[in-house]
Image 1 (spheres, rainbow, N blue to C red):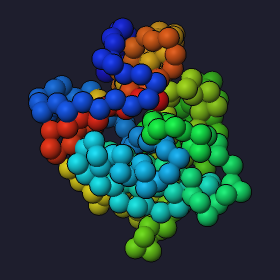
Image 2: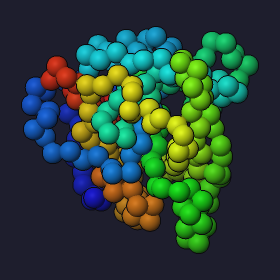
Image 3: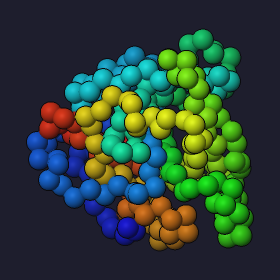
Image 4: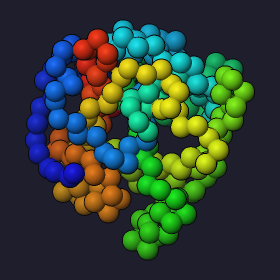
Length: 237
């Protein structure tokens, strides 16, 4: 679903907001069907894990490191085929570039999201025919703590307007992280906003994102996650 609207997030600032709402499960879900995962960036992984546990009641599990990328992560399932990736600098890769500026984050915040459009080769062809510039598909991998390897391919838009996702295709022999990451939480809303909501909506339709779009002064992502205790964690970029 795409729509353009102006709506204030009550008391949201440039960081993250948390409000316990016992009836979150009764609220209408507004989650893109193509959502794969959202990324919560922080400058320290342990701090990020504690941050999420405090506001959802569920502790994320260590996922592994990204060799050459300078990061490591922890994971939390958000329902079928959706998960939260807490991503932070890897202290063992101090010379790696910090392309998401994670070391500079004063508090955890959204730093991106990933969508699964299907087979990336076909998706790349469709983007090329539509005149959309991109990079990839590029292979990636990560070793899980149990020693199993995960493999995927990603495609990145050259201009993501600050809120558009990157795209991912998991290999057939890889377990999707949502399947065995700690469960109990659920994503109930993902929205993106920007000063030119009409153009953002046009691009969303072109990319088949079915994501809610609203007009705001600057590009931002907003996500709402419900925890098993009735708490709700709202985070923004």
